[in-house]
Image (cartoon, rainbow, N blue to C red; front, side):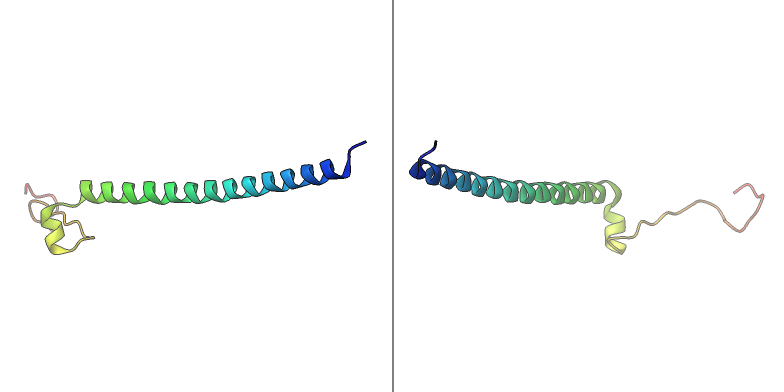
Amino acid sequence: MIRRRDQIRLSVQKLALRKKRAVFSIISVALGVLIIVAIDSLIHNIRDLLIKTNFTEDIDQDVIQVSGTGNPYAYGSNS
């Protein structure tokens, strides 16, 4: 038979473990969210670095201008 004092001490230890587990759970969720946001931001910045050039940044930061050669309305011509 377990004594009353030991039962109370064991109950307090279990409560302390649950608090630690809860704190670790909150920290791990927050860390996971931060990692996902950081990776998304990094990928977005790398995409901007690769796609945008100095010429397009002077026009608009989110516009990529494509220019072709010849007359697009001249069907079948050798332009």
